[in-house]
Image (tube, rainbow, N blue to C red; front, side):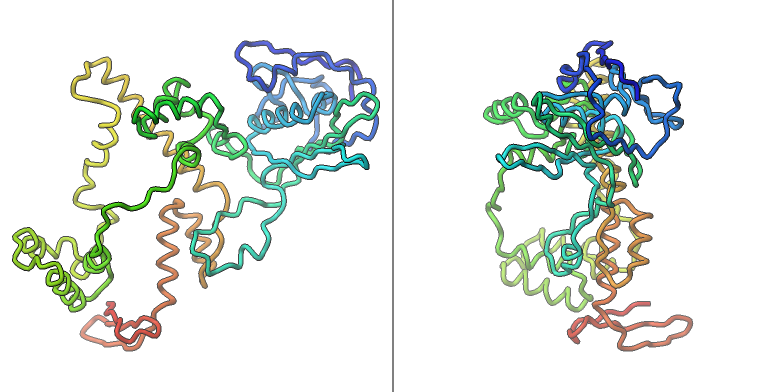
Length: 424
């Protein structure tokens, strides 16, 4: 290791505050005390402290013009642990992983003498949380895979400074592309100024999506906002109770959405219109005549690929309506249309991140089929696919009827002889 003084220089403007304190000369002469470097990689002797650049050929990087190597990191002294956390956070942002704080050790006086910062995929989830099959809420995806990467700092008794005693930089998982890094929890932060901005805009009746779009416009794009829209909801949104609820909503849901046979549907429909006293209402009569277009009992067996009759363009119109208006000129239209495109791309990036980061907990009796679904489908479609697997074990075949060239299987819900379906 080169024992000459290490200088970290900010070569360009606009460096984040976390690196301002790095623009100083650090005396590395006394760093032989209890220092372990475990990089899990090899460095060419000719690099001579080359800039850290994320490439396929080496593990060097350049963080916004600041030249740093892993060797440089273990030679830096910090005045407090927050500075070390800021450095490791920015380092992880460029490398493509998230961090969290690990073990903290105190001395006999109760003072902290050691901090450990870990990759957020360190360790493993406790098995008891993976075996809770009766949870009502969806299990979180498994992200921990025992990653060994860490940075450990210790306090130097003589000066009160903090130094890096151990730095492990080998990961046992793929590092994330730059466009996904900002979705990691350790890199998502809502600043106090953003909170104040959100509060002031809410007080004048501006909706949360509009507030998010305003902050994105000020930041220079959705990809430059340091938090997601869900973070905003978690910060400033409170649970709203359902208002003006309809006591017959559950009954209507059974008629329109429940997976009934035709006879059951007719029975529930008749019970609903009689209870509501709408048997002679023209709109109800017209809706009933069109039942083959919306009632599950009548459209079962038809493949629509999840597309509704209103899915042709209304969804796109609704999104465009949030950004463009008919009074806009050509320039305003193009500018705001581009904002809409950026918004849609940001949503796609977030959904792609959630589909690729972590592994869903196996919940069915068909683990191989469930694992293949994780690889084939997006996270949203996988949840639907898994529900179909769960339903398959809730029914049993009670009869098989052979007619001409087809077989009709009569299936029955478990312990519910009154719930049967015919499947061809």
